[in-house]
Length: 262
Image 1 (cartoon, helix red, strand yellow):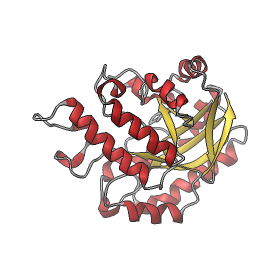
Image 2 (cartoon, helix red, strand yellow; image 1 turned 90 degrees about the horizontal axis):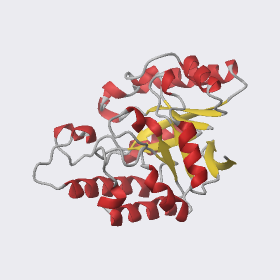
Image 3 (spheres, one colour; image 1 turned 90 degrees about the vertical axis):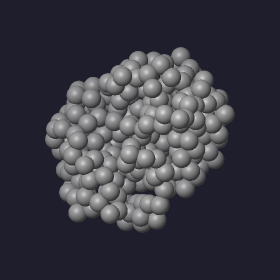
Image 4 (cartoon, one colour; image 1 turned 180 degrees about the vertical axis):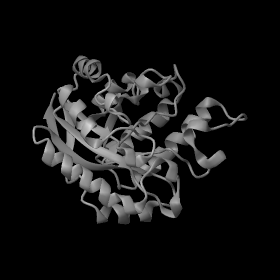
């Protein structure tokens, strides 16, 4: 198993020491992990949920120390990089300055949305749910098309419990998958939804046949913000992969994509 999405307390909303995350992964039988803390952003944007620029060296040292202490598990150095329109040049320069193994694209804020642009707290009383989901996915597609990222993280995290974007906005889902394939990205099956009201991964497991049929690579991430969340619900998800005929996962080294048989 591979957990390609783990945070550290440098993001200010995670708990525990980096060594505790690694030890939990080893206990779970996970063979490879990637630490992917939240990228610093310009103008002190959203400091409550990410590192500051002067903390990136500390983060890098922590990952190196973990690699040295636990040679029995593969540990990658990554980043979760928000796509936010207007920050593209900053993100590109930042990524070029650092020797990351993996870069996960995520969207937590949308520039043209009100109330701080926070996608977890949107309020559009005059718009249908379908209109909101379409707007969100159009922004996700813009991020994909920048070519700055390796993996698309928690892509349907905007969904309400019980919703399937495949059912509600099927045309936009197909457009998104086409953009992912064209950009040679992978899709993360992010299991953090199991500890939230939606009670399923991001994206939902109903995406797997479409992902498979479009030959899009897949990886897995727990999005752990506490050591106990590492590898959350991986075993049933991997079982579902086998049922759907998904036989390989991707991992990254120095941003080079490779495959491993499940």
